[in-house]
Length: 111
Length: 116
Image 1 (tube, chains in turn purple, red):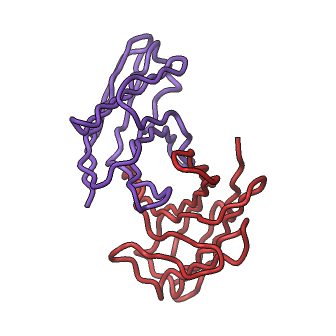
Image 2 (image 1 turned 120 degrees about the horizontal axis):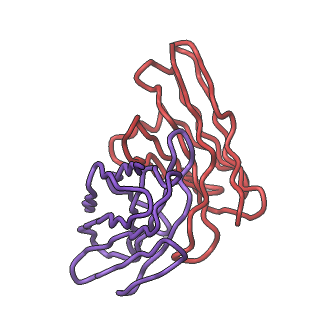
Image 3 (image 1 turned 90 degrees about the horizontal axis):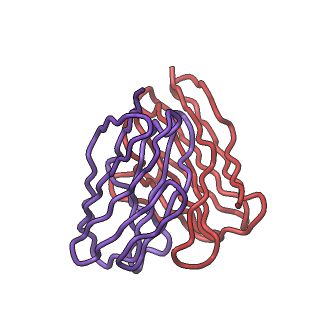
């Protein structure tokens, strides 16, 4: 089975840095994705981690620790447009490319 | 990036009628597509895996006779909500993945279904 947890809501200030955590308990873990979703729109891909460590892509970075079942998404230099829901999703061996999503974190960026 | 087109984006139907939602991969072939359902301010819940040329695989608790899935070609999967009821009102999203493990999923624009 799979259990994926994220904080429900977070608030941060424009220009600041925010870290969104994701913990998972997944049999046959085979990779973790982060997606951004604005209300009423489809999710858009942010990052993919399968090995331990940090993946950096512009203002966004994602970290994975397989031994701890833990990942985080780091957003730097926050902008108002970053206000959205952030979803972590995992894949497992035998599941093909099936994604199981976490609970999602609603981020609000304030002035 | 790859493009997945989902149609319609919004639909309102009467209780008891059926609604078909299409998901197309426009510039790549997808042997597998996925259908998700999302309630307001909630995460995506996988409903079923659509396999080209074979029966869909449904997640536990999803009624296969209620949510009919057809994947007749490598670029098209359809979800039909049969005998719709107000509780079926939701945001439905499809995704398709290019070949290869670890490849990002590309999502359709989603369909907002309202059953009145």
